[in-house]
Image 1 (cartoon, chains in turn yellow, orange):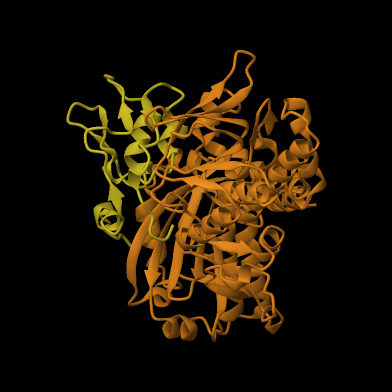
Image 2: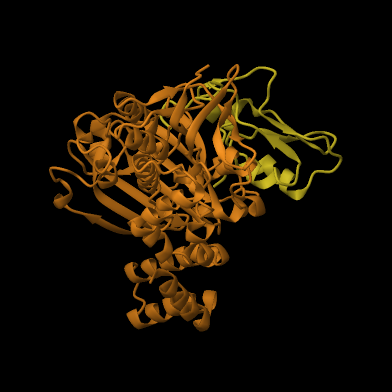
Length: 96
Length: 435
């Protein structure tokens, strides 16, 4: 059975305070993404990572739940930078 | 910002941080606690099952006002294939006791309560404050923290790092390594709301009774993973988690897997008609004993998930967090009372208290389990669930096939899939890792 899932519909339930213009995760400029960076386009539970037309990987962390999966996979190689959002910003779990 | 110096700064207001802060403040220490969320709990995610005896050691009368969901009277374990499940379950009226042993909780609410308790015993809690760096002196001793607030340098004799599984401070300061992808699981979950009566009738419960189900099987697509369905008072927590290294290799997406899991014929009826109010994701430390980092140093200790304290086999995390927080608090208080400085040498006391406790003993017992499941995930999480399901069908379907022939067919299925040697070796490996 194949079930179509839009992660946007899931994230819509959540509460966020987005720190506009100050993304807490960035992807460093690259020409060809590593396998780990490409994996983030499917593994990220908020689908923050997407493949661009140029074949590079881009991040929009507005829906980020701050789990750290991408940090574990790609921070050490220097492909991404990862900070916690400023105090009070980011995801705000109602139930957790 | 605050100019005064504290006996201790606690980074994080989850289970471990609250336990440490409460333990120290209730013994008269001057404690500052920093939390990056809007309120304590707003960044925290758990299934969640809470074990009473670990909290009793910190707040004995917690049952009077803690936000508890249901006390658990029934535990089910399911081995699932794509169409059904084989179950093992235990239910007993003995769990309907005056002081129940296990409860389901909702973390955002529970953590707010725990934090209120901390403030009642004198902890200064600063929320919406992200700690950006540890403050080290020229000798490498931790003397405080830097925060993202204006002029945000805060000083203390000792810093308790309760910063969670994804603790940036400790790894940035070189106190411990970043968790390896094969040592952490990514878990996703949803909160499904239903009227209390509906939950009670679907799970055969009454009043505050609760039921929890944990599952392994084909839904994790051969990855090392676990699913769960926990009953809260008016909601059901449903989710699953698999190792990050497996996710990276399989390229499965966690939300698509969660959706398929919810639509499984064994699970869908439990959730029918519910309203989803939240989708959460979190990492879980799964590396066990071998993944525990250095736990103390000059002017610092690390507790809870940040210290990789989680018993993956028994799914115990928050009680290890509470216990390690409490023991860190007790160790720091003892040093303070004896006028001993919180040097690396003296803070070894924290490690000694941990070693004497159930925490280290349990983690040591299962030290080989994470590796076993990781290297054999396709057998344990895909082949065996399918084989067990086929065996159950062979046993239960009556179509005139002689029983001996049925049994031979079942045996043949197992041997074809794993070979005789494979079956024996899996059993031996499991037995050795368990003992």
